[in-house]
Amino acid sequence: MSEPQTEDTMIAALLREREGLVQRGLDDRVAQVDEQLRLRGHKGARRGQKPADAPKPPAAPTPADVATAPVPEQKTEAEQRAEPPKGRRPQPKSES
Image (cartoon, rainbow, N blue to C red):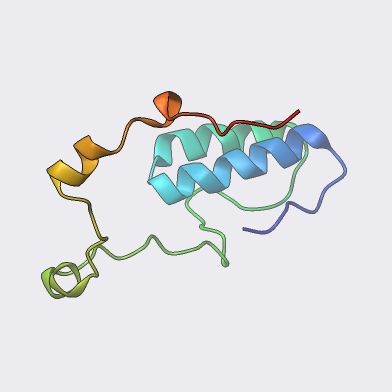
């Protein structure tokens, strides 16, 4: 995501908000933000236009991706019970 190129902080905030609304597909809110931009004298994106550099949403993992994904190593239940919780582990004795 690129930063809006403007000195006006309100316009910059509206442009950032607009980018998020476009990505989420909230066209009615995009129209409202466009109106506010127009009222503040901004000559940028118009209603219905998407930013050219808008990132595409990530693709959902396919069943093949899920099946081949590495499984993190987990301790067995017996191993988990043998080790005390972090807060209850004995502290090392410091020699003073």
